[in-house]
Length: 70
Image (tube, rainbow, N blue to C red):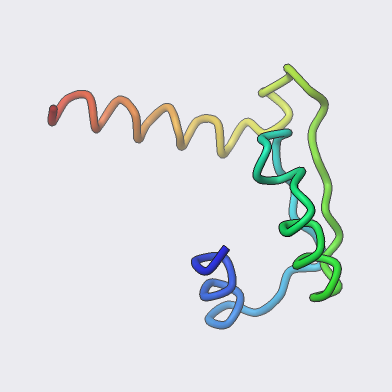
């Protein structure tokens, strides 16, 4: 969560954050941090990655780039 807080300090607080249903994003510490900062937590439907298309594409691109180097 430190990297997220650093990003917030550099770019400001968003009104909401949309994530998938990864365990980290459903954890009490994550939700408590967002609540304390006044940020609304929004999650996409389970097993429907197309609802988070941009970030899913980014992960795919990163995995492909790492695979080429390794």
